[in-house]
Image (cartoon, rainbow, N blue to C red; front, side, top):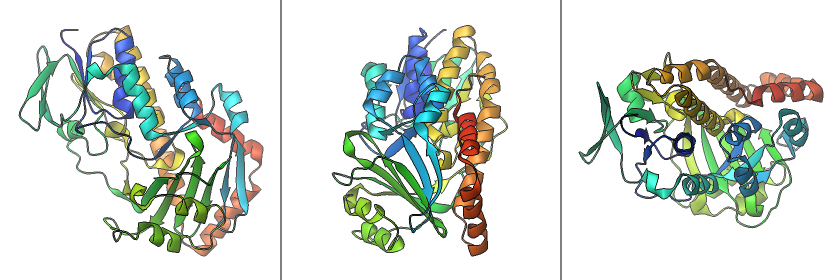
Length: 379
């Protein structure tokens, strides 16, 4: 190609795309808006489909060894009663790869080390781009610009590249906010659990080094803020009386380590590609986190994009990438949205019926559904 492939965004999707493309022989430059890439965020669940995608570029073993393989998971009521349980080890064997939980910072550091720091430039916030006959120019907030053969917009939920391509505004609010954190020290957990209450949820996931990643959701108007110094105590009030280890997990999390973000999403877009530019990850298909597939689908995007360009090193390959990915990802986006609405129900009769159906669904049916949803689908 006449010039490098430019990637706007140094998150999980952008870094994985950089690795996949570099290993396929392409010159790559990754631009991250932050002044430095630090261990920020909380935990991620790398489902079996993403581990299989990483296997295509030789990264599966490194990710598995850096994280924590999950053996079982359950959905519960606030009193601790199990509504549904899944054997994740059995599902992993059926699919051909385990389910791994890992701190986002751990995964990001691994990806940067694999890609090579020379390919990543920090403090470079994208401001726009222009295409021309021989390539594409990416502009930055500081007024500088770079030229390349192609541009991949992996710049997240508030993507500048998407805004220029689709002009569809900011993503809408899902109706619930989310707090996230990682414990330091006790308690040590062996199983990941999600508990569904009245318009609120609490989830715990064991990750590497004996830590626990947790999240908490609440139906509330958009844009809410917590009183400084009272985030943890507020959560302790919201989830008072819930089954162990909810209280212990909150107590073991430093106040300053608790993050809060409103959950945003987008309905499937009509396209992700225009000329020499393609969207990837959240910039293409922002989804609610209810299936744990946001980062996983970005990883799949990256591997398939590199495969398409390897087969045909031409801008037309971007359309093939879109064709191979879009139907699968659109289905995941809508499934995650539906699950979130189900889990965040407030009506008592609706919640009773929901919980009853979960309890009565045979484990074999749940297993088949999970296996079908997390199989690697290269398109």
